[in-house]
Length: 109
Image 1 (cartoon, one colour):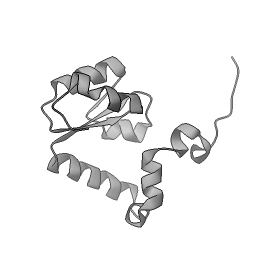
Image 2 (cartoon, rainbow, N blue to C red):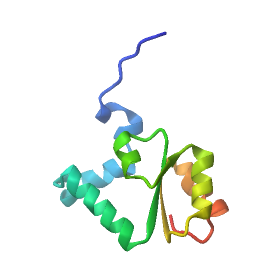
Image 3 (cartoon, rainbow, N blue to C red):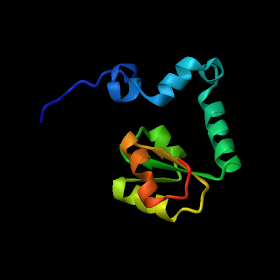
Image 4 (cartoon, one colour):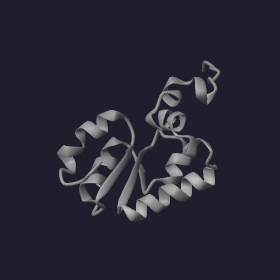
């Protein structure tokens, strides 16, 4: 088995160039929040907006811990189709955002 050295998180393209990273860079309030404050804010918004968080199983553990459902692509599509939440938050590739109308046409993403 080949051993590879992982790049630091900020240098990995899959982590460094995300919408979340760009939001943090743009918003001073977010930049100054602790992880605990961010989690509290996410949970508050989830409740206020009747949202469900679906995370792909390749996401970081902290994201998976916040999610209502974690799974592969098939499982996430099944959960999205049967949820009664008003808003679906996909933590996956942008492909899922494009496919969402086909399996949850009445939901906001």
